[in-house]
Image 1 (tube, rainbow, N blue to C red):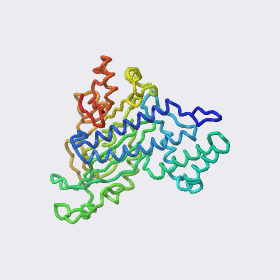
Image 2 (image 1 turned 30 degrees about the horizontal axis):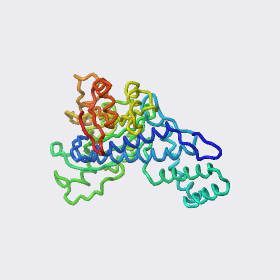
Image 3 (image 1 turned 120 degrees about the horizontal axis):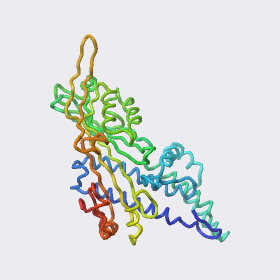
Image 4 (image 1 turned 180 degrees about the horizontal axis):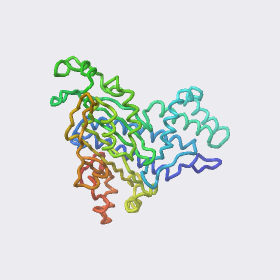
Length: 387
């Protein structure tokens, strides 16, 4: 942050460019999700789930933008993810726990504004110290009022239904994590069948779900209260980007006798590219630097990984031991990358402003940059898909 004695602190243009770019990217991604025919991912519920996590990212970036006005520590992973370092996410999580107390001990916004005016009139200088206190207050208000993206976001159940083939109830549950090594936000969505007898008594009437079920979705945690805390712990320990999706599903299948994960998705929301800021995609960034309007010099990518069960080995009970039911997952062995990711299928997506897309197209490197990606172009508040 550059300052002078008599003037208002000058905003670092690189920092300003980064925040303008990420704001535009998140706004574009939300627009993509809102459109009725959005393929993300042919299911209205998935769009609603992801929108909640995008909102969390938006709150986080607004908080960080205020934080850099009074705090020294804010670093971006310029060489890999394009997102802030994990330490910054932990700071948000920590400050959220004390924000209410700190705000109670600070002057109000109106008081701080009046103090700034009085200082300028009397001292003929910009009130840097008061400005920092105002920035801190706005930061704490954002952290307190908005749901920020935490290192780990606890699971929520959003739906219950019945698999008529197996006779088991199943629910859809999601959770989030900001990976500490990759510095990437991730969203997990699981479809889990439950063979617990207690849950069956709670939800089932004969071979059907009870007609008078009135569950106020979304609910915090797993729908099965007996396993909710254990499931929270499992998700926190098994949400690393370094774990393949098959490993996460296998671990869940093994650790919970009565939970049967039949489908698991992971949405990895990045990397993010911003001209003049990030350095992990020089071909992309060299072209983005030629875009005339800096607010259009960015590209956001994300990957959707999916794993699904193709069969189940029935449980075996006997005098000499027992084996619970186990899932067999499909791995697309004809695709080396799918094997490496441990998934049945995956999709890569890229979102980019129209001006930046035109610059890439004009460079002759469109096919090189977007190879393997489904490309979506932001233009006039709408998203033009599959370029």
